[in-house]
Length: 169
Image (cartoon, rainbow, N blue to C red):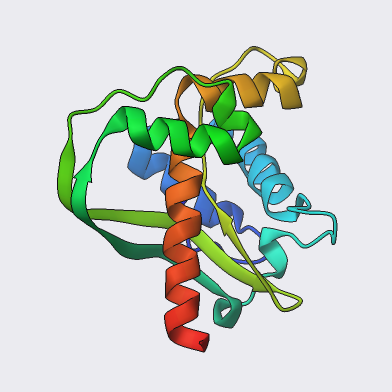
């Protein structure tokens, strides 16, 4: 999804072309067209804004960032810090990585502005189960904890904060 530049409304010919490029049969075109349309129109927050409403001017796809790590970063120390301030992190398995130093490079799938506020969105495709009952808030939180996506959104938030501070003061 992160690399899609989608026509509005979703063009079945575009979907068919993408299916062919991926080696899938064209019989999936109506299903995929309906699914993509639903994803684009799903509300992203309490204001009801959806991906289909975001103008090119108010979004940045694949925002690249760098975070300098000037002092050695130790997993246990970082873990202790983030557990203090984030309830989701408090329930996660311990962070495990070798001591690092240098520059962290990353990409945020989507940053957008809506009604004067900035949001970041990260696409995930984790398989949690056969139907929508497997995708409850509790199940998604458990998957986020198991994969330590909490650290990812914290790093993304820090990167966006620094970017905005630099750009808009």
